[in-house]
Image (cartoon, rainbow, N blue to C red; front, side):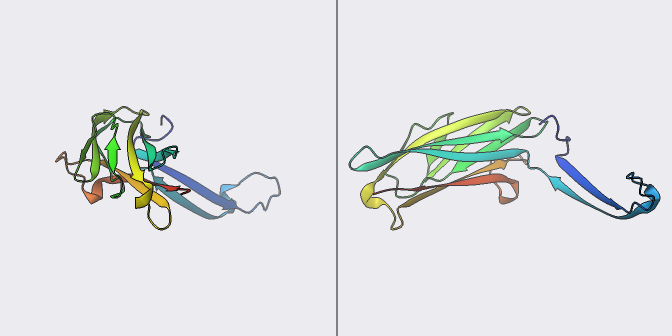
Amino acid sequence: PEDVPSNGQITNLAEVFVDRNTNGQPDPDEKTDEDSITLTLQPLSVQKSAAVDQSDADNISIDYTVSVNNRSPEPQENIIILDTPPDFASNVTNISNNGVFNNGEIRWDITSLSAGQAIDLSYTIEVPYSDLPDNNTISNTVTIYLDTDGDGVADPDEEEDSDTNEQLIDP
């Protein structure tokens, strides 16, 4: 993070020179073309991983870990993380870091992450084998928002990043 400018922008410039003097050194008078690209990094990134336990005869247990990273050289405030477990999950438990499960969605509110700081959030779901979708795949997406207007609402234009985890279950 300390190598990223505070505006989050990285510019790469390519220049083409003709070496008419055959000395192997670029001469500004021999420049024939140039092009550049500027990338703007979102300050926050998210990655989701899962550990699947199929030892129970009736239910699959999945422990999800959501890793949020502040890639910016500045602290980030008012972070909202939303995760919607599959609707066929029979139980959602062990929600870490004061996350709240309400109306089929887990929400974490993170007041602040320092520059370069990361935080891991976690929870567990149980899925009955009988409720697995036809393709035997459990898909789950997490999205993070930077609540720039401070209204406590995860507005679509405040979305920073998302990650989907898919687990193919061997029935």
